[in-house]
Length: 445
Ligand SMILES: Nc1ncnc2c1ncn2[C@@H]1O[C@H](COP(=O)(O)OP(=O)(O)OP(=O)(O)O)[C@@H](O)[C@H]1O
Ligand SMILES: [Mg+2]
Image (tube, rainbow, N blue to C red; front, side):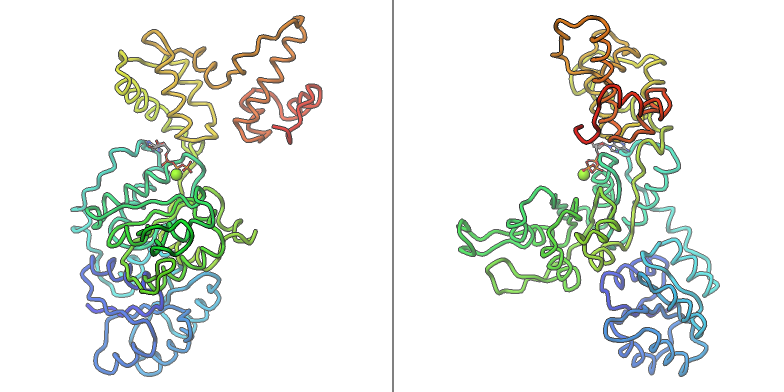
C-alpha cells in the first residue's frame, strides 16, 4: 500500500518513511503540497499524511484542494505545536484524523491502521532484539523509557531527552545509538554547557586554517565527525542563542560551512539532544529557541527522577555494589536490611549518579563484609569531618551539630522544605521554626 507524506521538515519525512516502511508501506515523500498534488494526477495512494504547517503553503488549503479533487482519498493531518485548533478545523473539512507533534510512533501506527483497516506488523516487531544490559530497573517508568528507546532506535528521528541530573540521559542516548542502524558509525557527543560561547561554533562546525587567531590548522567539527552517525548535544538549553540559530539551520538543511571557510559541507547526522532543565521554562525565559525545540523534539523521552521510581533502588544498589567490589578488587559485600531500608527511603536529589557514588564510597570505606545502617547514615549526612566543636559545652555542641545536619539535608534536597522535613521526620512548620532559631538562611546555602 502506498502512503504520501507531505511535510516541509525533512527529518519528519524520513522518520515517517522509516516507520511506515517497517510496516511494509511504500512511502512517497513531498516537501510541498504542490508537488504532491501534481503526483496525484498520475496515481492515488491509500493514504496521505499532510503537515498543517508547510512553510510558505497552508496545509489547510492543500487539504481543500485534495478533498475537492479526490474526495475519497483519506488525509491524516500532522499537527505541529499550537495548531490543535487548526487540526480540529481540518477534521471538519474532511481530514480523517490528526497526529500531534511530537509524534509518538505508537499513535502514528494506531491511527494509520485504524484508517486503513489493516493489522499492524506484529511479527516484525518481535524480531528486534535490543541490548539494554546497562539500564537497570524494572519499574513501569523504566519500562516506558526502554520502550521509547526501542522505538527511537528503529528510526533516524531526532530525539530529545529530558530529565534531572544523573537520571541516565546519556545512558539512554548511547542505548539508542547502540541499537540503531547507525551503531557501526560514530557517536559524537558535545556538552554545550561546558564550551565557552566563542569556541562552540568551531567545535560544532570546525574551522579552516587561519580562520581566527590561534587557528593554526584546519579542524573538523563535531557535525562533520558525526557524518552518517549520531551527534549527542548534551545540555542543549545552555547553548548561546546565536549558536542555536545556526544549529537550527544545519538541522533544516543538513549542510554548513566551517568557520572561515566557504565550501558548503553536506552531512547526514542523527541528532539526539538532552537537557536537565525544563525547556518550556527556558523558552519563556528567552534563552532557548522555540523553533529549535520543535525541530529537536520529534521523539521526546522523559527520564523519571529516582524518587519517582523508588522500587528500583534495591536493584540499583545491588548492581553498583557488585560493580564497585569488582572494580576495586574487594571481597564480596552486602547491605544489611536496615541499610537497604534507609537507602530506599532517601530521596536521591542527585538521582542514579548520586546513588552510584554513595555505593562506591561505602564499598571502599566499609571494612567488614556487611554495610550497615550507621555507615549509610554517616555517608548520606556527614557533617564536615574536620569540625571538632572546640571548646563548646554540650548544649552549644548539640546546637552546632543540629544546624550543620539540617543545612546538609537542605542542600541535599535543593532547599525543598517539604522534602527535607519529610526526610528529617519533622513537620514543615517545625522545620521552619528550627531554621529561625538556628539562624539558617536559605539564601546562604
Ligand atoms: N537506570 C540505570 N541503570 C544503571 N545505571 C544508570 C542508570 N541510570 C543512570 N545510570 C548511571 O548513572 C550515572 C549517571 O547517568 P548519566 O550520565 O547518563 O546521567 P545524565 O542524566 O546524563 O546526568 P547529567 O544531567 O548530570 O549529565 C552513569 O554512571 C550511568 O551509567
Ligand atoms: Mg549527562
